[in-house]
Length: 457
Image (cartoon, rainbow, N blue to C red; front, side, top):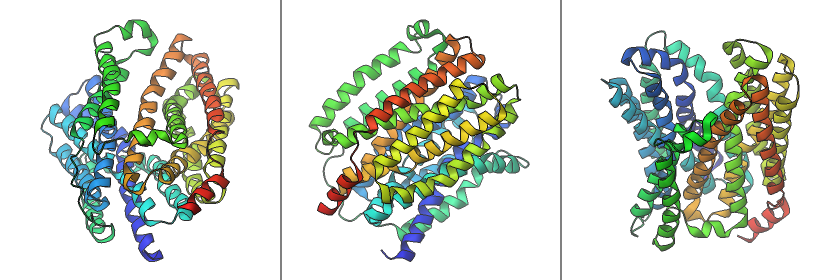
């Protein structure tokens, strides 16, 4: 594929990932209007957000695996079409149940967009240029949280429906370009699809997500014994070992047990789990600003803008550096920045200047971790026929970490009485976790080893 073709493919992938990411950022301003239209209670409103994340968690490994079996183009088109269908159903929803179902359809469709995009980069870009391409895709998330609330505010002047209607022409353009630019399916894999593994994994992940969502971390012991938590945890504890046993016997498993024969892969998904935990804890940064500085909630949200800008600018730069320095150096740099940012929030007296400095340092760290390096490693370690499946597996580990992070921060903060002291104790807990991740990351392969393995292929 020539340079011009690569640029067109990158534009296609960038816009697709941006469309999916925007729907997480853009819905915030719309929630009050949707709540008023459908007379929704707080729990229903929370599920409108959570269902997108939950269906994304379930859909990522399944659609990623299908991409390896049936071709990037076919599953990318299917994913974008599912996202567009969910958007249309949201606009047409006559009631709350339809609304929630539509949100789940939308999230499931979005689940395939990022793993397939990363796999396409692995298929079409030479190894020495993958980091830059992955870094550019990683910048999408910072960009989405910059323009999402602004775009949402503009479209809400007419109706919340326009937040979802705008997805339809974008999806149509993406489908048209995907048919033109993405590689076809080639020979269809005739082996039996691992439907049993897919079902068991989906049930286990849904149960885990429901349990963590219902967990009251301020009253952990009581909450664990409640009927809204322990049965779902039990399903998870039974389901995950059962899934592993099914995968060991499957002809073409959703998650190949051989993935975990690679020490590099085991280290990567472990670090990704921890990074997802830390990332979701950042949701509580504005609460620290409110408690520690005394600003309003809206002002606290604006104080995060320098951090988001740092992430958006740094992600593509980090991607380019990844091609030159190797993944271990970038991961260690990112973890060190995150650790420094957390320590500032945990140990310093809060002021606007301190809050912004800590946010910028932490934002640089997250930009170095969330976009390129883990996906770069997965592309390096996975076989060509398993590229998308490995990306889906990475999505699952990061999403589980994100589920756990909010519960950890909320629980620690509540146990210390909330307020500044509570949140600083919670961020100190995340800092300790990040320090442990630094030790784990030291065992990743050096640049010299990565280059030698790449040359040997």
